[in-house]
Length: 225
Image 1 (cartoon, helix red, strand yellow):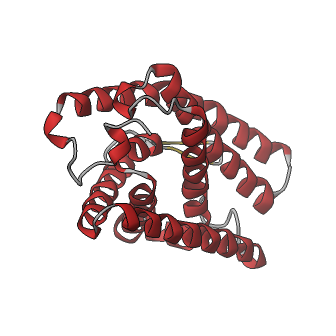
Image 2 (cartoon, helix red, strand yellow):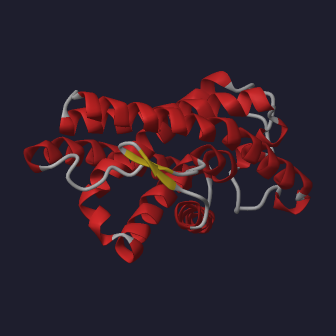
C-alpha cells in the first residue's frame, strides 16, 4: 500500500496534507470517545499493542512490490476487532512512522499520503461494523462471512486510495493504469487470507477467558453491543 516517493509531488501534496489532517482530527475524536469509556491505561496499552503489531505486519510478514505499490498484510480488521478503532488508528499511524524513520527514510515524504490510505478505510469499516455486524453477537463469535465483509471493505478502501493517488499524481496513461490494475488484482489475495487469520485470532481470544473484562482488548470482543 506504500505510494513511492515521486508518485505525488509538488503542489499536489497539499491535498495529501489536508486528507491526513482530517484523518488525524477524526482519530482524536475517536480517542476522546475511547477515553470516556475506558481508563487511559487501557487505551495506552492497546495503542502500544497496535503499534507493535503494525510494525510486525509491515516488517516481518511477507510483502512484495506489485505495480504501483507494495502488497502488505496490514490486518486492519484484526486490529479493529481485537483492540478497538482508536488504538488501531494510533497503531497504524505510529507503526508506519517508525517503519519509515528506521527502515525506509525515503518513504517519509509520502507519510501523509500513506497514512490517509491506511486510516480512512479503517474509519469506514468501523462504521460498517456498527451497521452490518449482528449486534447480539460478540466479536469472538463472528463467522467467516461477517469478517469477510470487513476485510473486503478495508482492503477495497486501501486499493481505492492507492488507485486515487496513482491517477492523481501520474495521470491516466496506459502504463500507470496497468500498474494500478496489477496491484489491485494482487491485493485480492489479501482479501481471501485475512478473514482466515482474523477468525484464528478471534478463536484464540475466545479461549483466553482471562482477557474478558481486562483493559487489553476492546469490550466488544467478548460482549454483544
